Amino acid sequence: MLGKLLSYAATRAAGEAVDGLARRAIWTGLAAVLMVFAFGIALAVTYWSLSPRFGATQTAIAMALSCLAAGFIALAVPSMIDRAKKAETAAAATNPVTQTVAAVKEETEAAADYFGAVQVVASAFMFGLGTARQLRRKA
Image: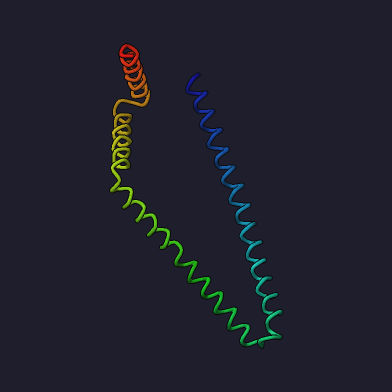
């Protein structure tokens, strides 16, 4: 019976996750299409408003160069983010507090993998309870 209950809960959670993901993908796709249309309309309006003042050829060249510059910036953003993450990781690696936290996390995960999560939590609870009793006796 417990197995059926767990199976039902897992199936339901997976179904809700897939439904949520599909819904998010559809709305994100619709938003992307609308943004592309808005960008196209903005380009047309910009061309119509600038071409009488600067001429058709100069306006088209300026808009093309602006779009090209924006494209190059968009291509550079992921590498800039990667460099920032690497710098953050390097800075964190030299921090002794971060190293200690990472070591404790690694040991905790290894203990949970070896002994099981329930036994690790129970042991930590008993350790904390024993420490609290010792502190209470000293106080």
